[in-house]
Length: 206
Image 1 (cartoon, rainbow, N blue to C red):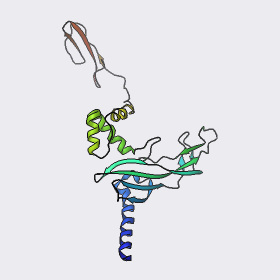
Image 2 (image 1 turned 90 degrees about the vertical axis):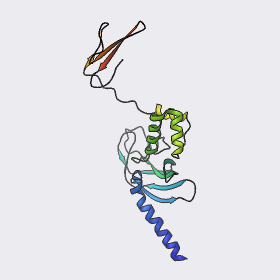
Image 3 (image 1 turned 45 degrees about the vertical axis):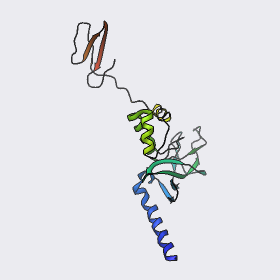
Image 4 (image 1 turned 180 degrees about the horizontal axis):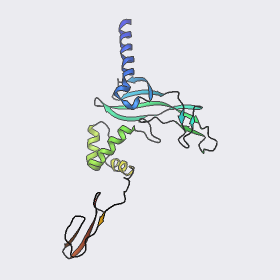
């Protein structure tokens, strides 16, 4: 019986050691344990005792204030939802000119300020919303074990940053008698006249 327990413990340690290679966003933390007995896979992790940058001024600090646990929803594994519970540090800021007295460390690819999802899951939700909008996106996310209501999917889209606008280098415009041409087009539909201005290498402007 003791040999069986030792074998199981050794297999679990091996799984914990190999987990960051399967889930690359865990490479910045130390995986403590994995609980897969229930309907949700729970991964407990701990940030490493390394200096961290202040989120206000960027100055590095290793003066620890305290630790606290976070709960982050992650993409499903094997058809089962995943919850990552990292223990993260709050540190004192060492820059007297910075307005932040303390700050919470962030792990690249895993944690984002005020976010309860991993960037991987957030990107999945945004992609589903862009492609299928509210109702269709919610149905797809439900099939992927990342349930979200049809009203919450558009809300996530509204949080996405807008693409950077680029000033056009080549602009064309069509006058009243002009026909569709390389850079511009004019149309007349039921007495309503319109002009289409084109940015040749980019897109239609109006």
